[in-house]
Amino acid sequence: MKAPALLGRLRFDIRSLRPSLSRLRRKGGGAGREPYRRQPGKPLSKALLGTVAALAVAGGALAGWLALNAEETTRAWQAAIPAATVAVAPLPPAEPPKPPPEAKAPSAPAPLATDGAPLPLPGQPAAAVSLTPAPVQGLVEDSRNGPLPRIAQDGRKPWQVYARPFPAADKRPRIAIVMTDLGLSGVTTGNALAKLPAGVTFAFVPYAERLDDWVERARGAGHEVMLSVPMEPQNYPRDDPGPNALLTMLGPDRNVERLEWSLGKAVGYVGITSTTGSKFTANPGAMQPVIDALKARGLLFVDARANPRSVAGPLANLAGVPRALADRTIDRDLSRGAIDDQLRELEELAKTNGAAVGFASPYPTTIERINLWMTALGDRGIALAPVSAVVNIQK
Image (cartoon, rainbow, N blue to C red; front, top):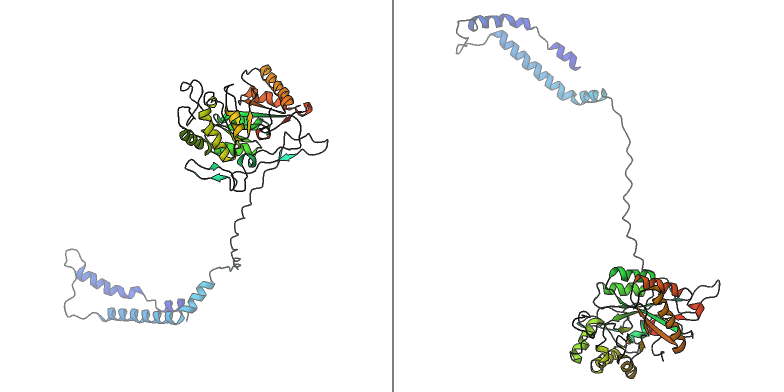
Protein backbone atom coordinates (compact mmCIF):
# COMPACT_ATOMS: atom_id res chain seq x y z
CA MET A 1 0.00 0.00 0.00
CA LYS A 2 1.31 3.48 -0.93
CA ALA A 3 2.00 6.04 1.76
CA PRO A 4 -0.47 8.73 0.46
CA ALA A 5 -3.39 6.30 0.46
CA LEU A 6 -2.65 5.17 4.01
CA LEU A 7 -2.49 8.74 5.27
CA GLY A 8 -5.79 9.54 3.55
CA ARG A 9 -7.57 6.80 5.49
CA LEU A 10 -6.27 8.16 8.75
CA ARG A 11 -7.90 11.56 8.25
CA PHE A 12 -10.77 12.47 10.50
CA ASP A 13 -13.08 15.40 10.81
CA ILE A 14 -11.87 17.77 13.43
CA ARG A 15 -15.39 19.09 13.69
CA SER A 16 -16.46 15.92 15.51
CA LEU A 17 -14.37 17.06 18.44
CA ARG A 18 -15.90 20.56 18.65
CA PRO A 19 -18.80 19.63 21.02
CA SER A 20 -16.41 18.18 23.52
CA LEU A 21 -14.14 21.22 23.30
CA SER A 22 -17.11 23.56 23.72
CA ARG A 23 -18.15 21.81 26.89
CA LEU A 24 -14.62 22.06 28.22
CA ARG A 25 -14.56 25.84 27.57
CA ARG A 26 -17.92 26.35 29.29
CA LYS A 27 -16.89 24.44 32.36
CA GLY A 28 -13.38 25.97 32.87
CA GLY A 29 -12.52 28.77 30.40
CA GLY A 30 -15.14 31.55 31.02
CA ALA A 31 -14.23 34.93 32.44
CA GLY A 32 -14.57 35.08 36.16
CA ARG A 33 -14.89 31.39 36.50
CA GLU A 34 -12.44 28.99 38.00
CA PRO A 35 -10.47 26.98 35.50
CA TYR A 36 -11.66 23.53 34.80
CA ARG A 37 -10.21 20.77 36.91
CA ARG A 38 -11.01 17.15 36.32
CA GLN A 39 -12.51 15.67 39.42
CA PRO A 40 -10.52 12.86 40.90
CA GLY A 41 -11.77 9.43 39.96
CA LYS A 42 -14.10 10.71 37.22
CA PRO A 43 -13.50 8.73 33.98
CA LEU A 44 -12.67 10.46 30.68
CA SER A 45 -15.40 10.72 28.06
CA LYS A 46 -15.82 7.82 25.65
CA ALA A 47 -15.29 10.12 22.62
CA LEU A 48 -11.91 11.30 23.85
CA LEU A 49 -10.77 7.78 24.66
CA GLY A 50 -11.84 6.62 21.24
CA THR A 51 -9.88 9.38 19.56
CA VAL A 52 -6.69 8.53 21.48
CA ALA A 53 -7.08 4.84 20.70
CA ALA A 54 -7.59 5.58 17.00
CA LEU A 55 -4.44 7.69 16.91
CA ALA A 56 -2.41 4.95 18.63
CA VAL A 57 -3.64 2.32 16.16
CA ALA A 58 -2.85 4.61 13.21
CA GLY A 59 0.69 5.33 14.52
CA GLY A 60 1.36 1.63 15.03
CA ALA A 61 0.16 0.81 11.55
CA LEU A 62 2.34 3.52 10.05
CA ALA A 63 5.40 2.31 11.96
CA GLY A 64 4.79 -1.26 10.82
CA TRP A 65 4.39 -0.24 7.20
CA LEU A 66 7.59 1.80 7.28
CA ALA A 67 9.49 -1.12 8.79
CA LEU A 68 8.28 -3.40 5.97
CA ASN A 69 8.60 -0.95 3.07
CA ALA A 70 11.39 1.46 4.14
CA GLU A 71 13.98 0.01 1.74
CA GLU A 72 11.57 0.14 -1.23
CA THR A 73 10.52 3.70 -0.35
CA THR A 74 14.17 4.79 -0.05
CA ARG A 75 14.95 3.35 -3.49
CA ALA A 76 11.95 5.09 -5.00
CA TRP A 77 12.99 8.39 -3.39
CA GLN A 78 16.59 8.06 -4.62
CA ALA A 79 15.35 7.16 -8.14
CA ALA A 80 13.39 10.41 -8.24
CA ILE A 81 16.62 12.44 -7.64
CA PRO A 82 18.68 13.11 -10.81
CA ALA A 83 22.15 11.54 -10.56
CA ALA A 84 25.15 10.93 -12.78
CA THR A 85 27.86 8.33 -12.47
CA VAL A 86 31.40 9.35 -13.44
CA ALA A 87 34.09 6.78 -13.95
CA VAL A 88 37.37 7.78 -12.28
CA ALA A 89 40.55 6.25 -13.63
CA PRO A 90 42.92 4.97 -10.96
CA LEU A 91 46.04 7.08 -10.30
CA PRO A 92 49.24 5.75 -11.85
CA PRO A 93 51.70 4.28 -9.36
CA ALA A 94 54.13 6.82 -7.94
CA GLU A 95 57.55 6.72 -9.56
CA PRO A 96 60.44 6.14 -7.20
CA PRO A 97 62.52 9.32 -6.62
CA LYS A 98 65.45 9.68 -8.96
CA PRO A 99 68.86 9.62 -7.28
CA PRO A 100 70.70 12.94 -7.38
CA PRO A 101 73.22 13.23 -10.21
CA GLU A 102 76.72 12.30 -9.21
CA ALA A 103 79.06 15.22 -8.79
CA LYS A 104 81.54 15.37 -11.58
CA ALA A 105 85.15 15.78 -10.70
CA PRO A 106 86.37 19.26 -11.61
CA SER A 107 88.15 19.26 -14.90
CA ALA A 108 91.77 20.21 -14.97
CA PRO A 109 92.43 23.79 -16.02
CA ALA A 110 93.38 24.34 -19.60
CA PRO A 111 97.14 24.53 -20.16
CA LEU A 112 98.54 28.01 -20.12
CA ALA A 113 100.81 29.52 -22.71
CA THR A 114 104.50 29.50 -21.87
CA ASP A 115 105.76 33.03 -22.37
CA GLY A 116 109.37 31.91 -22.37
CA ALA A 117 108.93 29.23 -25.04
CA PRO A 118 109.97 29.90 -28.65
CA LEU A 119 107.33 31.58 -30.77
CA PRO A 120 105.16 29.05 -32.67
CA LEU A 121 105.23 28.84 -36.43
CA PRO A 122 102.25 30.39 -38.28
CA GLY A 123 99.20 28.16 -38.03
CA GLN A 124 100.57 26.10 -35.12
CA PRO A 125 99.27 26.30 -31.52
CA ALA A 126 101.45 27.92 -28.89
CA ALA A 127 103.34 25.77 -26.41
CA ALA A 128 101.39 25.00 -23.22
CA VAL A 129 102.43 24.72 -19.58
CA SER A 130 100.72 24.13 -16.25
CA LEU A 131 101.97 24.19 -12.67
CA THR A 132 101.95 21.19 -10.35
CA PRO A 133 99.00 21.51 -7.93
CA ALA A 134 100.04 22.20 -4.35
CA PRO A 135 100.59 20.74 -1.84
CA VAL A 136 102.45 17.69 -3.13
CA GLN A 137 102.58 14.64 -0.88
CA GLY A 138 106.02 14.16 0.63
CA LEU A 139 106.94 17.84 0.30
CA VAL A 140 104.99 19.06 3.33
CA GLU A 141 105.86 18.94 7.01
CA ASP A 142 103.23 19.67 9.65
CA SER A 143 104.24 22.13 12.35
CA ARG A 144 102.71 24.48 14.89
CA ASN A 145 103.26 27.27 12.36
CA GLY A 146 101.38 25.45 9.62
CA PRO A 147 102.51 23.32 6.67
CA LEU A 148 106.22 23.79 6.02
CA PRO A 149 108.08 22.80 2.85
CA ARG A 150 110.56 19.93 3.06
CA ILE A 151 112.75 17.85 0.80
CA ALA A 152 111.07 14.55 -0.10
CA GLN A 153 112.70 11.23 0.75
CA ASP A 154 113.36 10.62 -2.94
CA GLY A 155 115.27 13.92 -3.19
CA ARG A 156 112.59 16.09 -4.81
CA LYS A 157 112.80 19.73 -3.72
CA PRO A 158 109.91 22.19 -3.46
CA TRP A 159 111.64 24.84 -5.57
CA GLN A 160 111.84 22.38 -8.46
CA VAL A 161 108.43 20.73 -8.09
CA TYR A 162 106.46 23.98 -7.68
CA ALA A 163 108.37 25.88 -10.38
CA ARG A 164 106.72 27.11 -13.56
CA PRO A 165 108.14 24.85 -16.31
CA PHE A 166 110.49 26.48 -18.77
CA PRO A 167 111.93 24.73 -21.87
CA ALA A 168 115.56 23.87 -21.16
CA ALA A 169 116.26 23.87 -24.89
CA ASP A 170 115.46 27.58 -25.10
CA LYS A 171 118.90 29.22 -25.32
CA ARG A 172 117.71 32.81 -25.64
CA PRO A 173 118.74 35.32 -22.95
CA ARG A 174 116.21 35.22 -20.11
CA ILE A 175 114.59 37.98 -18.11
CA ALA A 176 112.64 37.28 -14.93
CA ILE A 177 110.24 39.94 -13.63
CA VAL A 178 109.38 39.60 -9.92
CA MET A 179 106.23 41.50 -8.90
CA THR A 180 106.82 42.09 -5.17
CA ASP A 181 104.81 42.82 -2.03
CA LEU A 182 101.55 41.41 -3.38
CA GLY A 183 98.64 40.74 -1.07
CA LEU A 184 98.74 44.05 0.83
CA SER A 185 95.93 45.45 -1.31
CA GLY A 186 93.22 43.32 -2.82
CA VAL A 187 92.64 45.87 -5.60
CA THR A 188 96.25 46.09 -6.77
CA THR A 189 96.82 42.35 -6.35
CA GLY A 190 93.68 41.54 -8.35
CA ASN A 191 94.72 44.01 -11.04
CA ALA A 192 98.14 42.38 -11.35
CA LEU A 193 96.59 38.93 -11.48
CA ALA A 194 94.15 40.01 -14.19
CA LYS A 195 96.54 41.91 -16.44
CA LEU A 196 100.09 40.58 -16.14
CA PRO A 197 101.35 37.76 -18.37
CA ALA A 198 101.73 34.37 -16.72
CA GLY A 199 105.52 34.43 -17.07
CA VAL A 200 105.80 37.13 -14.38
CA THR A 201 106.75 35.76 -10.94
CA PHE A 202 104.56 36.84 -8.01
CA ALA A 203 106.00 37.48 -4.52
CA PHE A 204 103.41 37.69 -1.71
CA VAL A 205 103.90 39.07 1.80
CA PRO A 206 103.19 36.31 4.36
CA TYR A 207 100.86 38.42 6.50
CA ALA A 208 98.49 39.25 3.64
CA GLU A 209 94.81 38.48 4.17
CA ARG A 210 93.54 35.41 2.29
CA LEU A 211 97.13 34.59 1.37
CA ASP A 212 96.43 30.92 0.60
CA ASP A 213 93.63 31.96 -1.75
CA TRP A 214 95.81 34.52 -3.56
CA VAL A 215 98.64 32.00 -3.97
CA GLU A 216 96.27 29.36 -5.33
CA ARG A 217 94.74 31.82 -7.80
CA ALA A 218 98.14 33.04 -8.97
CA ARG A 219 99.45 29.50 -9.51
CA GLY A 220 96.21 28.55 -11.25
CA ALA A 221 96.81 31.41 -13.68
CA GLY A 222 100.34 30.11 -14.38
CA HIS A 223 102.40 32.44 -12.18
CA GLU A 224 105.35 31.09 -10.24
CA VAL A 225 105.06 32.17 -6.60
CA MET A 226 107.49 33.32 -3.90
CA LEU A 227 107.18 34.76 -0.38
CA SER A 228 108.49 38.24 0.40
CA VAL A 229 109.67 37.70 3.99
CA PRO A 230 109.88 40.82 6.20
CA MET A 231 113.46 41.59 7.33
CA GLU A 232 114.99 44.45 9.25
CA PRO A 233 115.60 47.70 7.29
CA GLN A 234 118.31 50.24 8.01
CA ASN A 235 116.01 52.69 9.84
CA TYR A 236 114.19 50.12 12.00
CA PRO A 237 112.07 50.61 14.14
CA ARG A 238 110.96 53.86 12.53
CA ASP A 239 110.38 51.85 9.36
CA ASP A 240 108.35 48.78 10.40
CA PRO A 241 108.76 45.84 7.96
CA GLY A 242 105.74 43.92 9.31
CA PRO A 243 104.83 41.17 11.79
CA ASN A 244 107.51 38.63 12.79
CA ALA A 245 110.24 40.38 10.83
CA LEU A 246 113.74 38.89 11.01
CA LEU A 247 115.90 41.17 13.18
CA THR A 248 119.64 41.38 13.71
CA MET A 249 119.14 41.78 17.48
CA LEU A 250 117.50 38.33 17.76
CA GLY A 251 119.34 35.05 18.09
CA PRO A 252 119.46 32.46 15.27
CA ASP A 253 116.75 30.27 16.82
CA ARG A 254 114.33 33.17 17.15
CA ASN A 255 114.89 34.29 13.57
CA VAL A 256 114.47 30.75 12.22
CA GLU A 257 111.23 30.46 14.20
CA ARG A 258 110.01 33.72 12.66
CA LEU A 259 111.04 32.48 9.24
CA GLU A 260 108.96 29.33 9.75
CA TRP A 261 106.01 31.50 10.78
CA SER A 262 106.17 33.10 7.33
CA LEU A 263 106.77 29.81 5.50
CA GLY A 264 103.72 28.21 7.15
CA LYS A 265 101.24 30.71 5.72
CA ALA A 266 100.90 29.11 2.28
CA VAL A 267 102.02 26.22 0.08
CA GLY A 268 103.28 26.01 -3.48
CA TYR A 269 106.02 28.66 -3.48
CA VAL A 270 109.56 28.12 -4.76
CA GLY A 271 111.49 30.26 -2.30
CA ILE A 272 111.76 33.64 -0.61
CA THR A 273 113.02 37.17 -1.16
CA SER A 274 112.88 40.39 0.85
CA THR A 275 112.48 43.99 -0.25
CA THR A 276 112.86 45.42 3.27
CA GLY A 277 115.97 43.73 4.66
CA SER A 278 118.56 46.37 3.84
CA LYS A 279 120.14 45.92 7.30
CA PHE A 280 119.48 42.24 7.87
CA THR A 281 120.85 40.97 4.53
CA ALA A 282 124.10 42.88 5.07
CA ASN A 283 124.76 41.06 8.37
CA PRO A 284 126.48 37.67 7.77
CA GLY A 285 125.86 36.39 11.30
CA ALA A 286 122.12 37.06 11.04
CA MET A 287 121.79 35.89 7.44
CA GLN A 288 123.65 32.58 7.62
CA PRO A 289 121.04 30.68 9.75
CA VAL A 290 118.35 31.76 7.28
CA ILE A 291 120.38 30.45 4.32
CA ASP A 292 120.92 27.15 6.15
CA ALA A 293 117.18 26.82 6.83
CA LEU A 294 116.35 27.44 3.15
CA LYS A 295 118.84 24.77 2.09
CA ALA A 296 117.35 22.23 4.53
CA ARG A 297 113.87 22.87 3.12
CA GLY A 298 114.77 22.81 -0.58
CA LEU A 299 113.95 26.47 -1.32
CA LEU A 300 115.66 29.08 -3.47
CA PHE A 301 116.58 32.64 -2.53
CA VAL A 302 116.39 35.82 -4.59
CA ASP A 303 118.44 38.71 -3.23
CA ALA A 304 116.55 41.93 -3.87
CA ARG A 305 119.76 43.83 -3.09
CA ALA A 306 117.94 46.35 -0.94
CA ASN A 307 121.47 47.09 0.26
CA PRO A 308 124.30 47.10 -2.33
CA ARG A 309 126.50 45.50 0.35
CA SER A 310 124.15 42.54 0.84
CA VAL A 311 125.90 39.24 1.62
CA ALA A 312 122.79 37.09 1.09
CA GLY A 313 123.59 36.16 -2.51
CA PRO A 314 127.21 35.12 -1.90
CA LEU A 315 126.23 33.16 1.24
CA ALA A 316 123.54 31.30 -0.71
CA ASN A 317 126.02 30.55 -3.47
CA LEU A 318 128.56 29.14 -0.98
CA ALA A 319 125.89 27.01 0.75
CA GLY A 320 124.62 25.53 -2.49
CA VAL A 321 121.23 27.26 -2.24
CA PRO A 322 119.78 28.16 -5.68
CA ARG A 323 120.02 31.96 -5.93
CA ALA A 324 119.23 34.85 -8.20
CA LEU A 325 120.12 38.54 -7.89
CA ALA A 326 117.95 41.54 -8.62
CA ASP A 327 119.59 43.67 -11.34
CA ARG A 328 117.09 46.52 -11.50
CA THR A 329 114.05 47.84 -9.69
CA ILE A 330 112.26 49.04 -12.77
CA ASP A 331 109.77 51.46 -11.17
CA ARG A 332 111.72 53.49 -8.61
CA ASP A 333 110.75 56.35 -10.92
CA LEU A 334 107.12 55.85 -11.98
CA SER A 335 107.30 57.88 -15.17
CA ARG A 336 106.65 55.85 -18.30
CA GLY A 337 109.93 56.82 -19.88
CA ALA A 338 111.95 55.83 -16.79
CA ILE A 339 110.27 52.39 -16.60
CA ASP A 340 110.91 51.81 -20.31
CA ASP A 341 114.57 52.71 -19.82
CA GLN A 342 114.95 50.18 -16.99
CA LEU A 343 113.38 47.43 -19.11
CA ARG A 344 115.78 48.17 -21.95
CA GLU A 345 118.69 47.95 -19.50
CA LEU A 346 117.44 44.53 -18.38
CA GLU A 347 117.57 43.37 -21.99
CA GLU A 348 121.20 44.47 -22.32
CA LEU A 349 122.16 42.75 -19.05
CA ALA A 350 120.39 39.54 -20.16
CA LYS A 351 122.33 39.52 -23.43
CA THR A 352 125.59 40.09 -21.55
CA ASN A 353 125.10 37.74 -18.59
CA GLY A 354 122.67 35.18 -19.98
CA ALA A 355 119.92 36.27 -17.59
CA ALA A 356 118.65 39.32 -15.71
CA VAL A 357 116.13 39.89 -12.91
CA GLY A 358 113.91 42.94 -12.55
CA PHE A 359 111.88 43.81 -9.44
CA ALA A 360 108.67 45.82 -9.67
CA SER A 361 105.60 46.83 -7.66
CA PRO A 362 101.98 46.39 -8.83
CA TYR A 363 101.41 50.02 -9.85
CA PRO A 364 99.03 50.55 -12.77
CA THR A 365 101.74 52.36 -14.78
CA THR A 366 104.22 49.53 -14.16
CA ILE A 367 101.74 46.91 -15.33
CA GLU A 368 100.94 48.98 -18.42
CA ARG A 369 104.60 49.34 -19.43
CA ILE A 370 105.42 45.66 -18.81
CA ASN A 371 102.57 44.59 -21.06
CA LEU A 372 103.65 46.97 -23.81
CA TRP A 373 107.28 45.82 -23.47
CA MET A 374 106.16 42.19 -23.78
CA THR A 375 104.44 42.62 -27.14
CA ALA A 376 107.68 42.39 -29.18
CA LEU A 377 110.06 40.80 -26.66
CA GLY A 378 110.34 37.56 -28.63
CA ASP A 379 111.13 39.47 -31.82
CA ARG A 380 114.12 40.97 -30.01
CA GLY A 381 115.42 37.50 -29.12
CA ILE A 382 114.60 37.66 -25.38
CA ALA A 383 112.56 35.15 -23.34
CA LEU A 384 110.41 36.07 -20.34
CA ALA A 385 111.20 33.38 -17.76
CA PRO A 386 110.12 32.49 -14.21
CA VAL A 387 112.69 33.26 -11.57
CA SER A 388 113.40 29.54 -11.06
CA ALA A 389 114.70 29.44 -14.66
CA VAL A 390 117.38 32.06 -14.02
CA VAL A 391 118.90 30.80 -10.73
CA ASN A 392 122.64 30.29 -10.84
CA ILE A 393 122.83 31.64 -14.42
CA GLN A 394 123.75 35.27 -13.80
CA LYS A 395 127.47 35.92 -14.05
